[in-house]
Length: 86
Image (tube, rainbow, N blue to C red; front, side, top):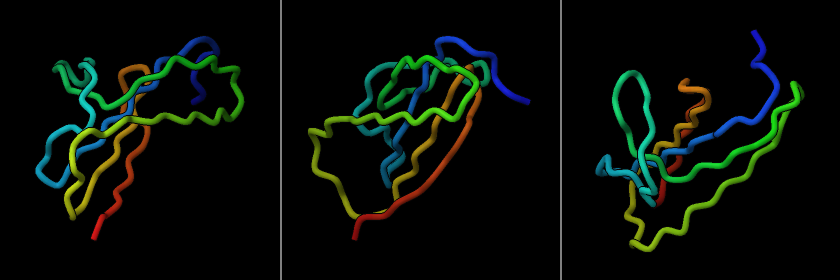
């Protein structure tokens, strides 16, 4: 199933190894609860593959460990990835 065309707000949440949200910028509704996000951006979706770049300016020292990135749009989790710092 393809999403309808139009403006979409994409949210990115980066969780630190201690399970806090990096660059917490606000909160959004997901599965009937409010969760913090790290960045958000409104993009125009035309029905075609759309590349989106987002950044957060971390003001805290990043600790070693595993970080989890979750991407949300239209109230749905649309992707996750993890990365590690040594």
